[in-house]
Length: 114
Length: 115
Image 1 (cartoon, rainbow over the protein chains, first blue to last red):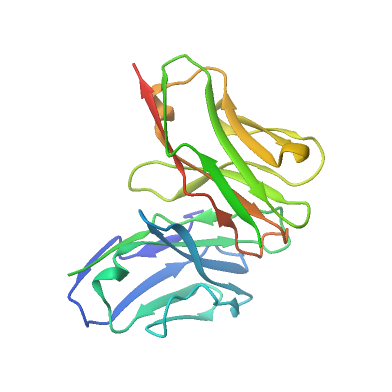
Image 2: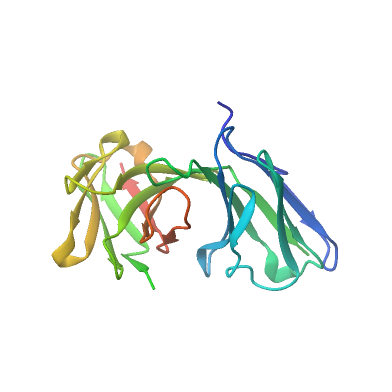
């Protein structure tokens, strides 16, 4: 099992550019979560999906953020346009809905917007 | 709404000493509680979890935690610290159960091990 795979590991972009973060959940998992980690705010849940359907996106900070899950093995988090305050580590996690609580995190994408 | 408070953003202990990381939660329903560990430049790894049943939960790497409902606490302990335990530790709560809902995390405690 390769675990939750995120790409890229690091992303540096200029303010105003579009950024797309990618996540491949563990095969067979049917829930997927996007978190953002900053020093100031800690870990924040942005959005999560069950069976590819967005369930709660109340954590998405602004309309500049959007997330999709076109199939069970792929999800994207897009920021357009990006701003310096979006700089953070973005984590994807997945779980099996019917299983015992708790999920598996990816290694994260460190985003720097200059 | 649920919340988690971790007392102490930094905790320093000597190698071989007891590790105690504190976590208090608030939840309107019986909670599911978790401890995660994060090593530098890595994602979070589940240490242990409490769902139902026995209130003393054992996890990986010799860690354990006890759910105390009366104190709304879920403190993490390890009898003897090892240098490899140096990391960031996060307590988290879910009041919806299952693997399908988001967790609320505390701000984290950075554990420092002194040689």
